[in-house]
Length: 184
Image (cartoon, rainbow, N blue to C red; front, side):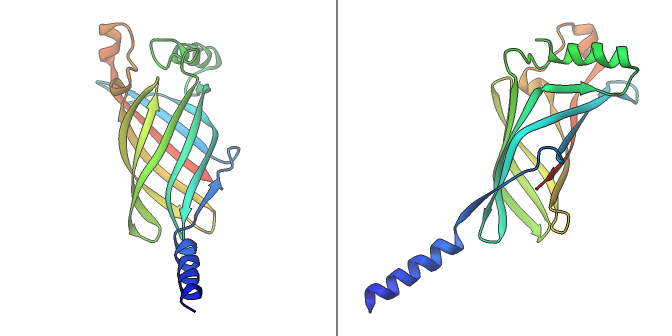
């Protein structure tokens, strides 16, 4: 009888703490990026795609995740066709993301603190150009639409994303903004 109770307790604990991977739908998920000029409004913006990713669900809540961004897909969309083409190529150069050397970026959510059942703060490790730095962001879950949304900014210089010209680099804000929607 004692063995049976221990086994039942083990199964109950295992079920409570069982982790499940919930893959994202990369064709419905999106990342919009933006970067402003330092001394006036407006700047550049565009999109970059997820290659793959998943949330970690423990019990009934999201507790983490891992997402891979395909930097080969980065594109500018704020200008006419030729300007977008030139900026997109420049973003892939060593001045910025050095996509030939570092074709992927990643975000690994390491901790989630819930404010309520649908809003949380995430702590994560963001890897760009082989450099891993911690980031924090607020996010919202929509269970009916099976989405998570967030907006946050990073200081691009922490990841070595620098334009190799001190004059031109100072005209660009150090902040890169991200608007993310992840869909299951």
